[in-house]
Image 1 (cartoon, rainbow, N blue to C red):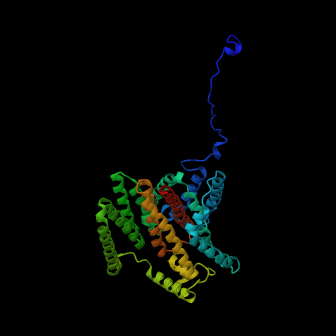
Image 2 (image 1 turned 30 degrees about the vertical axis):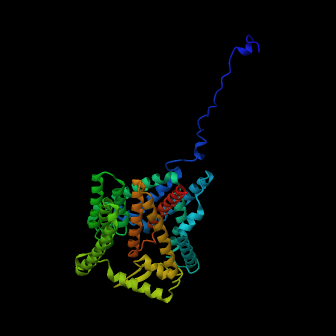
Image 3 (image 1 turned 30 degrees about the horizontal axis):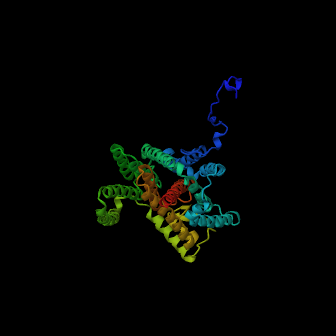
Amino acid sequence: MNPMSPYGWFSRRRTTLKQAPTSRLARPVLRVESGLRFTEILILGALMLAYVGSIAQPLFGVQLHQSIFAHLPLALLGPLLMLHLCGSSFNRDTPKWSNIVSACWPLLALGLFALAGSSFAKWELNITETYLAFGIYLLLIPFYIALGADSCRARSWAYALMTIGLLISLAALAGELARRSSGVQLHEIQYIVIGGFFAIYYASRNLLIKLLMFALIVAVAILNEKLTGYLVGIFAILHILLTAGWRRLPANWRGLYGIAALMFVAVTASTIAIIYVEFREYLPSGNPQVRFQQYGAALQQFAQSPLWGHAYLQGSGEVYTEGSLRLNIPTHSDILDLLKHGGLIAFGLFFLGYWKLFKLIHQAVKLTRADQLLQAYFLSVRFFQVMALLTFTFNPLLLKGPFLIVIWANLGIAAGIALNIRSRQAEAAV
């Protein structure tokens, strides 16, 4: 080529292709690598509303779970869950449904059992008060697990849920203190209130915050004036004290410490039983006349059909007579109600499903020792699960919409995160 020709006047330079910034219209369909999506934030809002419904008695002086707003959180939560999961599938974040169903299939089977019997009772036998809500809320558990089954958002979920728990605990305690003159107590919500402070105790590194959370746990246990509340508070305090000793000991002393801790817990439990027997007149009564009458009636009905009970074909309440009063109220024990309405089938499915969730969460406590936030989250959910079981063993919680969402959403999301952590650990080991 002639160097004097015009084609040789300019040398060619190789340039790399530039990528334009993502269009604002395209951003909603991109994968989110961290933080919570907009639909997940809306779901947290519906969960927050369920929390408010659970603490409405001390906070507002009303029982929202007995009003027309009882199932408002469910009405919001159902469409939001569907919208979120459809969006996740669109973004190719489809959860492994086989693992999810495997983690909660006994509770799904129980939900279908209760739903089938209660539907027939409601629309064919014209029974008003049924276990229909119990069945519907149980069937949401796999969707809660799917929410947590995303490794990118584990810490965001833990942070958000513990923050909500703390705010709700403070609001419930403030409400009780403001209404103390009217006799309002933290009845049936002690595991929620103490659980919120319990989570922040383990999540914080600041000694002053830890001492404040410990003081609030003790204050709630004392101010509650309910036997269940005393037990929840005692378990929280024992857990904190025994765990503190466990973590400070070298590994070769932990076996002996574990044996000593079990003996200490047994002695504490025996002491509590002796105090209750010897000083019952100074303690909250617990309405033994109502409970023993209902417990006896429930056991008699279970004995008539021990395998499947009444198959949820009868009403959820029973007539209790006291003087001139005739009240239609559920048994003061959801565990006995499982035996009464669903027999050994319902009882077995419930505890198998509850154990499977507990096992997942307990494994996650061990797998997250290197991450204080996640371990504090799983410690608090494990405590929440055990204390919720203690509470609804002596109270009818599993017929109330807001409580059902708070219990199953917390356990489901935690189980989903635990599933994901376990699968990642298994992949790393390979």
